[in-house]
Length: 100
Image 1 (cartoon, helix red, strand yellow):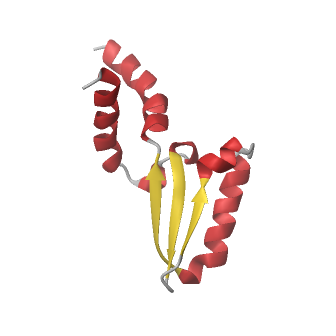
Image 2: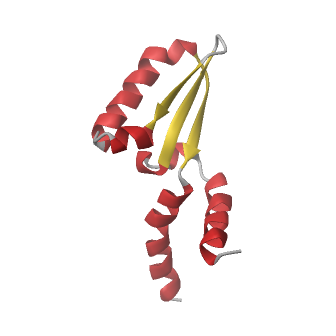
């Protein structure tokens, strides 16, 4: 296995243990909102970022969507972008481990 693939696999294990409410929006690919009637709504954050929306605007959109759909929401799934998490956390991890 390629070293980068091993690193991504390690991050997938770590991310599974994290409370998803603590993950920055920049590290989430999409939010899947499952509704009581069996339908679902997906907010693709990566697409919104690629379209030029700022994180603050996306946060407002997500908050508004949750508020408007609150009574109809059965469950919410967050699809985490492992590469973004690793890119965000790995430099800090390297700093800490370099001091040991």
